[in-house]
Length: 612
Ligand code: ADP
Image (cartoon, rainbow, N blue to C red; front, side, top):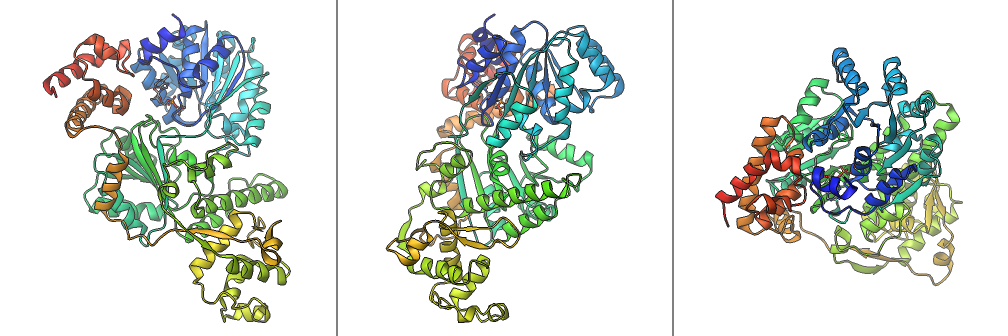
């Protein structure tokens, strides 16, 4: 069978997505490959299809048990034999799986990195025919990545034990230039075919909001989206508890996840979420890696994460099925302080020497700064993210809160001059807080101690409110007119164009948003409908719910999450095309041969009962 036939037979899809066929062809030609593709782009198929076409076994190295379980369940549902080898198996189960693997029962085997150098696994691997080693979440190998896993360094040693070097394929959704280099070097990729399909997730809406009461804003949002599954990320366990309790009081089907819960409770809560028993989860960043749930319709952040890598990864858990989904960050000024605390009290790198630790900390400060500016920029949020990851972006996207907001343009040159002037006159020695207090004319002990009240610019922006001053200051930082040092003091320095503003004719303009009334549940819901999650008529929506129920029942019988039976996208297509027989059903994207045999009739019956 060729790659197209396999795609249809096992996965039910007619076409490859961008990058997939190039990678598959590369692997089949015996080349190493390195794929940098965003979440939901379909990286798994890129190694699964060649694995079915090559002789021998493909080993997939994956960092998390939940991720492996999900992938193996997905493959088994599609009629492909696959297994995982990790610590969730009892010793007896592990031995049995390894024995089956040695007999060649599985073309695809998922393995945890910490298993690679164990005696029994090595014994199996050197005696088996390993045609490819696929490395999922390959950025975990890099110390510069935000998910460094020391066990990933075992991959290189493992490969040297194999009698024949297999094809190596590496996959990641997040990789800045430094991380990319690391992945290539550490894994010794040989002249790899590098495919970057772009980070843009056009189906995701990005928003930043600064409501007076975040909890209320979140409750309103969730209440307005009663049918949807969503993740709400919080910065601390305490916040998780509070947000979760607030939603539970309203009778919403919500659960929670953080490192303070027992293993068993975490597993239970995660399963409740994945199986849609509780389609809402409030969690810290401990939750999510390897969560493959494709029908998450929104990811809300109650607080700003510590860098854009984490934000994009967490937000990216929305809309994996390619359907429209929303990612909203609810920001408050306290978030930067909380994150700075995490950075300075990070115990993960204790084994590193002081110099490396300081370097990592400075990088984290820099990342935090860029993340904070994301919350302040008035330009396109998508463009901001894409530029951060080193990609060209259009100036506007028409699908983020900034592009959809109408701003007024204000000339803030005189305020900008005051801030720049104050920093220049004091010899660029102070942080932004002190400078803003000075130009605002504060009479605090600190201002007197630093003799800021003697500065020419002292009180020169007295008429401007402090929040507005802060906006102007953030704008100056965003534009690079001012910069700050990467240490806890964040000393303000003048950028290259600052003097043109201070002494020349250069002007500074700021986009300001008109005062917005607080969101209510009703308003949020209206906004949602107009931005349109699915374009289904009311009758089709009813049918969609029926199909969802049918899917839930089948998933329960099978003991798998509903989205593994069929994705929301596949159900939506069933609503739109209303197939009446096997041939029509098999034309729906996501319905492969094996899945039709298992589930086709049940869905056809459901559709027949509800002809619209
Ligand atoms: P990634 O690992 O890149 O985050 P996945 O491999 O989990 O993404 O794929 C995301 C979703 O896209 C899955 O539901 C998958 O079945 C689907 N998908 C992958 N390739 C295709 C394709 N060629 N056509 C349609 N859907 C696809």
